[in-house]
Amino acid sequence: MDPKSAEFTADNPLHILGFVFEELSATRVSGRLAVTDKCCQPFKVLHGGVSALIAEGLASLGAGIASGYKRVAGVHLSIHHIRPAALGESVFAESFPVSVGKNIQVWEVRLWKTKETEKKKMISTSRVTLLSGLPVPDHAKDSLDQLKKFVSKL
Image (cartoon, rainbow, N blue to C red; front, side, top):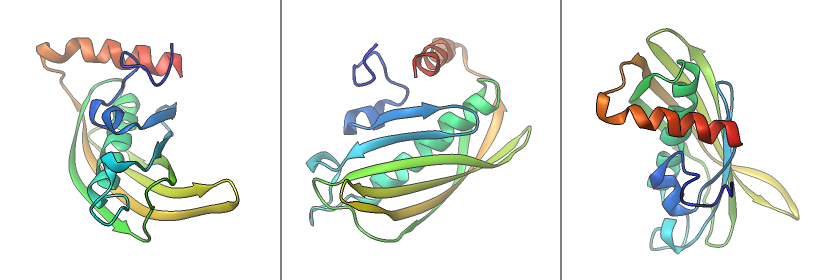
């Protein structure tokens, strides 16, 4: 299965922007995004809201897996934007748990711009707090199977 294909999607908003997952587990979620016009603000740098979307998406997926594929809900996001990533650059994102409890999880998410000729430079750092272990509504039960399938293919 091609990780860039439509059926290989763990997070639709991130997929639409071109984000590609590299690792997805209960202890680490990572991936890459090419900074394109779709994700830039008018000054041709990565929009801060896209960085927040990546943070929320990666933390939520990792927390969902860590909770045994139960539903999670973000309750707080704190993000620090350190430097811009310009149109045409590549961004690497990585998320990992700070605390995994039965009802509350806290995840750290870091984004770096990467160039083949330079060392990676951090562009943002985030903390995401999530409620975990929530019941999955009946209308969303199939999403768990899709997520498990996605995780098994990475």
